[in-house]
Structures are given as structure tokens and as C-alpha cells.
Image (cartoon, rainbow, N blue to C red; front, top):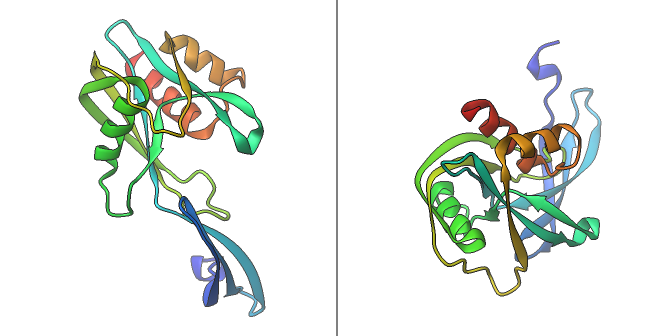
Amino acid sequence: MNDRDLTEVFVRERRKYEGTLVDVSERIVRLPNGKEALRELVYHKGAAAIVPVDSQGMVTLVRQYRTAFDRLMLEIPAGKLDSAAEDPLDCAHRELLEETGLKAGHMEFLTRMEPSPGYCTEVVSLYLATELSQHSPDPDDDEFLCVERMPLAEAAERVMRGELNDAKTAIGLLMAYRKLC
């Protein structure tokens, strides 16, 4: 099989919902076998996520309630782009300061990840933040979180034990651990 034998062709699309965070559409596609199928798509502006590691090898994480799973989750700091045109690096610096009060003297790009390509256009740019300095956090009005620090090696082990299973957090922590340890 070649790629042409796997590719779906756009037929038409209808916007179902326009929101603050996401837009939702129904798209009709033509399958490689000629039949049509429905695809539900969630359009997202994108996000940046940061693995902040200090000179002692400690990573800063944030604990926050996640409505979709009705529980608290421990994650790397992250946030959505203000617009599709925003530079993810600018977003990373902003979100790191807002959520943790940290400023990074050095921010290194790790990867771009597509957490749910089956239905969502979200792309998360992951960064490793080092040369950290502490300032005052400034979370958004609707953001309630608790900052936690732990050794990067411990965080990576917690990923491997399935205790930290948010995708951006798992990928970011494992990439940072591989790079620094």
C-alpha cells in the first residue's frame, strides 16, 4: 500500500460549535474505497508546556483539578496559545511565570506533540526550562493550582509507574530526564 491508498479526501464540513477554547465541526470525507464517512473534529489553537528543572535537578510541577476526569492531576506547567499566530516560545515563558512564578534564563525546544490526532488539531510545543529564577506567580482568575517540586529522576519514575499519565507531562518529563540525566 502507498500513502494514496490510506488518504481521506475532504468533501464538506459544517461548524457545530464555536467556543472560547475549541471549535467543533462535522466533516465528511471520501475514504480510499470511495465511500463517505463522518469525522468529528475539534479545532484547538495549540499550547505550550514546560519542564522547569533547576540547578539541583528538581522539577517544578503543578497540581490542579481537571474537570474532564473529575480529579486532581500533577502536570508540567502549560497553557494554550492566545492565538494561532502566537509564538509557542512566548506562550511557554508566559505560562511558566503565571503558573509557577519561575523565569527561565534558557528555554530549549524539546518537541511538538499531537496528543489526540484522531479528532483534535491541538499541537503542544514542549520546552525544557533551565537557569531558573523565582518571581511571583500570577495565575489566571479561573486557575487554582498548587506548585510541587521533586527530583526529575523521581518524576520520571512516577511516569514509568503510571502515576503521572497526562501525555504532555509524561513525554516532557521523560525527554528532559533523557537529556539531563
